[in-house]
Image 1 (cartoon, rainbow, N blue to C red):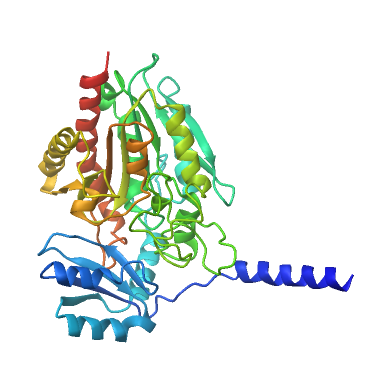
Image 2 (image 1 turned 90 degrees about the vertical axis):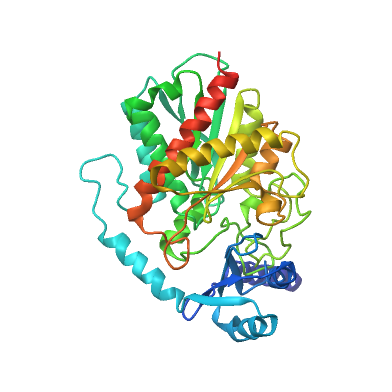
Amino acid sequence: MKLLFLILAVGAATASLEEEEYIPSYEGAKVYQLAPANEEQFSELFQYYGKEGHDFLRTSRALGDTTDVLVYPDNIEPFENFLAESGIQSSILTENVQNEIDEEAARQRSAPKANGRSISFNSYQRYDDIVAYLRQVAANNPRVASVFEIGSTTEGRPIVGLKLSSGGSNKPAILIDGGIHAREWIAPSSVVYFINQLAENSANSDLLSKVDWYIIPVLNPDGYEYTHTSYRLWRKTRSINRGSSCRGTDPNRNFGYHWMDVGASSSPCAETYAGKTAFSEPETAALRDFVLKNSKTIKLYLTFHSYGNYLLYPWGFTSALPSNNAELKSLAVQVNKAISSVRGTRYTIGTSTNVLYAAAGGSDDWVKGVGGVELSYTVELPGGGSAGFNIPASQIIPVGRETFLGIRVFGEYIADKFGK
């Protein structure tokens, strides 16, 4: 009996330790903008990628371009010593990240409400509001819109999407998702804007005639909600990692194609933690199952992230180019041209490894490499604010409007190539 009691006590203590989450403070954290002058400096800087206390908000391999790194207070002095020794050109974008987070929260609270519309683009919407909007769109447009669920999250939230179709069977389909990374608020808001334009703007009805659309605004609802309630720059899912006080897995390192080959961490506390196994997260497993179920019709996959203005395509695990590189690049160039026609916004185009850095386990690689969708892209939307991810809500419509012109190019291409 004493032995049983001891086992139960140890088990309870272990569970308590696992649930006592460690959350670093933004108070005094700084964001540095860095411009490595050569490959040697970039390599030296990249030693900090995935290292605790250092959060790479934006990264670019292009010499002359900049990399933004958030450094937590306990790591600032050694990081600044490193910068001085390495000679990397640097400036401070944000002196105190907490101040910026507080200001954004105040703007969210004071933002105008929907004014009778089914959704407002005056502020960043919570997950329940987004789901309610999808259901309202389906109710208002039953001939073309229907709600679907691909699974549930660790905390029990349904992962909800909207199918848009003018009817018919075996039509080519486009799959769009956003919000894989929780803190990238402009991604879900842009995806919701696409739904608004496709379902509620009759000028775009032609895009439904030959193509079906599966659109999932928030693939990581638990993390997304957590950024609204507790920790603004949270990136990962909200699963519990046994034996660690650090929660969550980076869902965009958790897909089972060359999983953990490169650019991912085995440490649960790292921002790029790939999980205990591939598809350990219910969110990534749900997308996997949906793609495999619809693999015969899905012809294009678009996953929206932020920030940095990149139109990326596989591969992320190697610098080798995909066999259809010419097509992927040509289509991206057309999309970039359409987007830039609004206000001059331009994107850098190329494979993930060659433009940014090598990182295996991403959704775009898996959807192409295993899911069989030859046209697969990651779109890194524009950033803003002092931390990049806190782009003001006043930019939701401008970003959505220009990006939707790119969506139109994608849609027309799939219709021309695969439509009957």
